[in-house]
Length: 164
Image 1 (cartoon, rainbow, N blue to C red):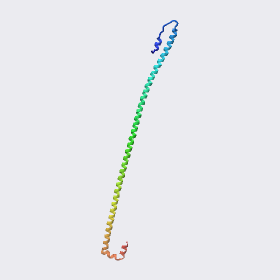
Image 2 (cartoon, helix red, strand yellow):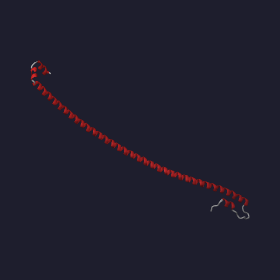
Image 3 (tube, rainbow, N blue to C red):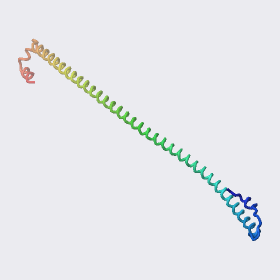
Image 4 (cartoon, rainbow, N blue to C red):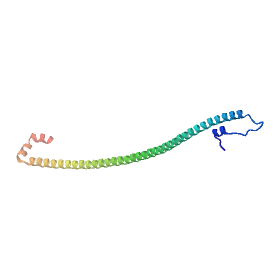
């Protein structure tokens, strides 16, 4: 049974012989009623504050949950970005390795081609020198066999020519 301040104030008691002083009882009831009214107001105020604080706490819980979800999402994104960067780095490294291997292979083919060309040029030079020597030897023999030069070879000039 819950009493209100008004019920306490309006409460009436039977008057009996040798009972309590009705003025003192009324004064006491008035005092209890006022204290009770103040307590009810205080309780109502505290309940309102409690509801406001519970609402604030709920808001904070929702914000905390949202922050947790945001943090989890940020961590996932950071992890995914790190994995993507690692994959991209590996891909770039593989591409660079393949490119360097291709460049080395191209350089090796070019070197072999140049060595082959050098060999061909050296062979061509030897062939040219051999033909030139054969040509010069043939012309020297022709000149030596020429009758006009054969007479001049008999003299001292022939000796000088041969010594050279």
